[in-house]
Length: 139
Image (spheres, rainbow, N blue to C red):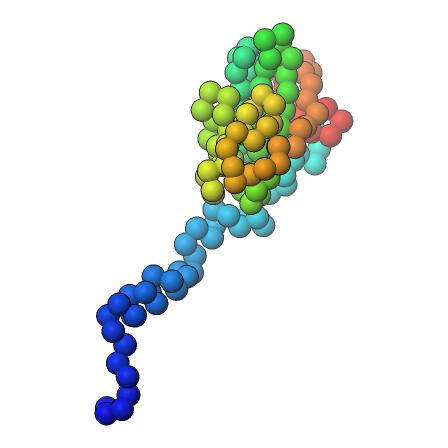
């Protein structure tokens, strides 16, 4: 049609590149799908022997990571990332890694090792009862 401008290939491609695609990454970062940030009642995580001295163990089903210090003391943290509330689902040594934006946390202290998170993980009460690790309120 005469008088009607025609978009250049570059304009069309730029528009496509800038248009958000529905669903891309949405499930990984949807805060409503993570479950509770911490146990709302005491949860039995497993045998005390599962957490090595100087190491950590990830309990994905409960959004908890437990570490054991050199003196045998257990420490527990929520694995819900403080940046976008995604559950961190990978543990490399004692480094907890969030899949959404790459935040990393020290599983022994809860401290942030890599941004974008800037706030440490939430510490949880933890105890041993009958050789089993129990975390959460009243633990």
